[in-house]
Image 1 (cartoon, rainbow, N blue to C red):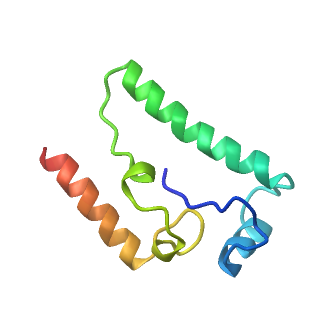
Image 2: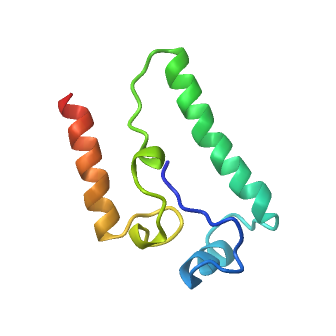
Length: 93
């Protein structure tokens, strides 16, 4: 799952701060949350490798830039176009 969680919310874009305050399960420990998010992605990669299932790893394929994100999880139009290109190329292979 792609995301661009900054190391700290202090310097994050306002939409990231608002997302954490309003939408994310009442998270109080931001570093623990981001570590868990990263662990989730790594678990998906490892499980897919274990069962020889292909993965389109958007978290790795899309540059780490908040300029491509609407909020920490959802792509904006530019990010969506980039993701669509990555997915299309992977499916064509």
